Amino acid sequence: MTLSMYQASVPVFKQMLGGLSGVLAKAEAHATARKIEPTVLLQARLYPDMFALLRQVQVACDFAKSVSARIAGVEVPSFEDKEASFADLQARIAKTLAFIDSLAAAQIDGSEERRIVTQAGTPKEKVFTGQAYLLNYGLPHFFFHTTAAYAIVRHSGVEIGKKDYLGSY
Image (tube, rainbow, N blue to C red; front, side, top):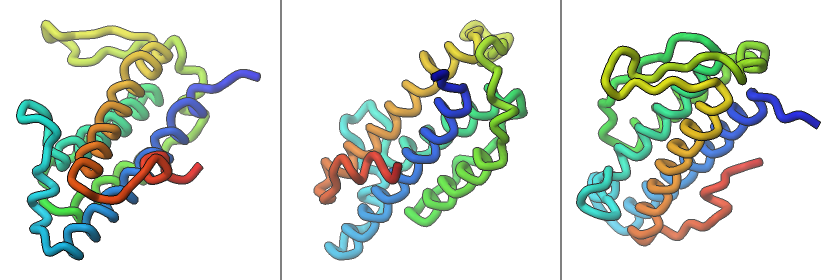
């Protein structure tokens, strides 16, 4: 049985973003129950030179939408990084999921050899095939940021576990 590019991307992004949404909901409930200012959790980080929770969620969404768009051969939608609350982050996840849901499997399947160029024309330009872009670049970066967001929330004392991270499948 062959695994298609669509099967290896969109359902994975949707599952993990759903898990991330649930983790954020528990983080917000934790802050409310313990009378912790939400900004404290949103600006929490694992180490001073790492992104804060808020930025980890933004970047995870960015990878989900940009990877999906590029392998589908459509323009990457631009989202402003203006989120400042748990509600804002939930809205960003919902907007990302809505975009991903708008892509048909037919747009993505067969993109294994599609030429993907990131940061075109810059000294950091990278050229990939669609399959290499998804499997060796996009998914690893996406998982890094979803995992970092989970770890920040867990490290902040929120009672979450692997089932929360994985979401529904």
